[in-house]
Length: 225
Image (cartoon, rainbow, N blue to C red):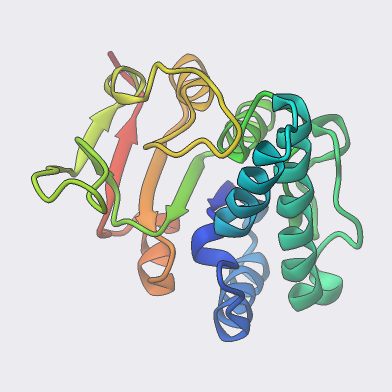
């Protein structure tokens, strides 16, 4: 079974949590031993947003700001590769054309300006026919609004891919994008009919349930609409 895991930088490495990275890598290694073909895309998180904000204040252009964010995602990917050792690729692919599932766990970050790591993960899932795209962030799933800001936000346990597309922000890409999912990624998920699960990445046991098709806490998105 091919699985793409889109792990947000805010849960993975903002601030850097060595214990979490070790536990997450052990989770991936166990899945790999069980025969899962894993592709992991690591986001930039708060550190990327901090650098992007600073560079913007210094006059950086949008594409340049994106390049800064991409660089941070690749550094975060390198941390995970360090924890995985010979179970992962020894270098970080910079293009989707160079990334494919195999015996080793594929780990990468961003690829090019104008899109987020959400889109990279969705493109990987589409290109390689992944049976599941697992989106792990620092919230429990999909809400009507950002629950970290709006206490009235309502949790949504199930969605069709079309409903996810409708819910995704239509404001377009900007460096440091923050939302339920990048609109470009939502379009790919709908067009390619990718089964997707949104979970809180802090709960690794729950992530395992989602991967293995068990009842899990989060939002399940299925093709339709």
